[in-house]
Length: 574
Image 1 (spheres, helix red, strand yellow):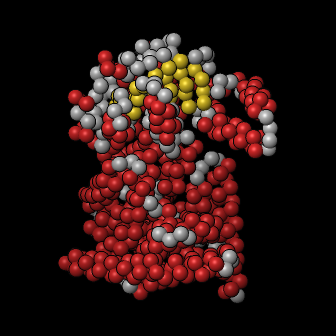
Image 2 (cartoon, helix red, strand yellow; image 1 turned 90 degrees about the horizontal axis):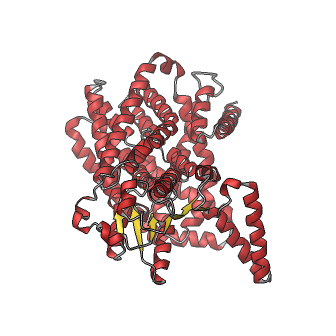
Image 3 (cartoon, one colour; image 1 turned 60 degrees about the vertical axis):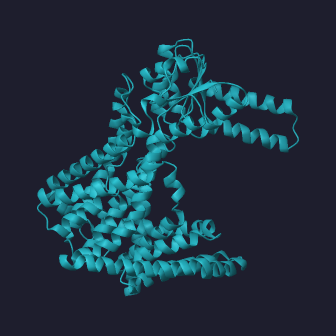
């Protein structure tokens, strides 16, 4: 009967995840929210459809282990280096500052015991990677300045979760023993990592190579899962959290040539167990608690949002970025992330906090996730405030005022390029190779320093700011290229540039077809969609490989452009 009960519970959980995820997708919300909310509905404190908690906890544990394994497989120092100092030092400063402020708020505002207050601080530093990535993708801002900052901070936050899982069990110790216990935990962690390194360098490549040589996906997947769960069990016997072993084994596999194959095989299984994990989290939330303590929940949500917004905004500004970038970056990271659930559960398991505290964290996290799209929309509506007057931004010690080109220096260049990302970098290089001088406007301090080293005429600032455009010599320019992917910034840049110089020829990057409506009536603006142009390049090379003549290919592509323009008048210009 127990076996049947377990199967029924798993079936209900999977069906609930399917329903919740589908509804969330229909409402254009992250599927994680759907999993959590449907978990609340089927949980023991609501409909009570699932009663076998042992099965739920087992699947949730496996889900967490697989999540940490893939985190280790995907982790890359290079991703943090892409955003320069703010990727590592800014991220660490955010974690420390938010945790400290949360600890202080727990002691002074909520009057919690110090272990509970400290756990609160450790929980709220983390933001939701899944929520933020989905919103950035939908808005076409993954490669924007604030998008890169958010991603770098999120990566660092997720990695630090492993450290937090080591620290949390120590909070239940007597204060005088904490330093000794922490030192002992660090020693055990170092020993385990040493063993993992040895296995990763000599044993795992040999083992995965032998299994891979058999060319059996099933055996390869079983090997990776055995390593993941075996490492988790190993850390348990070392007195460390299960997730630590899964993360370390992921790092070890990443250093082998089988990293991509392992990630591809594990990800579908990870997604299934992760869905069960988030459904099980929702089951832990007591709706009655939310109804009784809704004022406390709202107060916690707004406190967390304020603390995270203030710290991230201040750190971004101190790193040399403009107010616009700081505003959008901080507005997107105000929520409590999914790993905060894991930390809260660890607090309950170790007897540091009660179930009521976990319910408060769950309710606050879900509410903050739901508020994140609204937060970003409000920040986007405030965005024009940063494009009307002088920028007021400074680069700090890295760039002194004497390094900023004077207006007389830059007005001789007839081509202005806004943005030095992947697209802008290639354009600048090609123009210089063909003897064209250009002025680059860039808001990322790290990229500005790179441009100065290459002796490219550069203006540091927000290209959507009319004052910055004038400083770059927009009034005397004949052509302007807007290459960054931020839709709001592109629209503001083009409108301000044409307002200052009505005869300016503008080539602007278009991410979403819906954004083309903002350029209606601008006859001297050509919109370029990278995705659309890539499709034509694919067609060109396919027809060339098929033996078509060059003139026939050009005729076919011109016909496609004509058909596309007739279907979408607002995007006629490509």
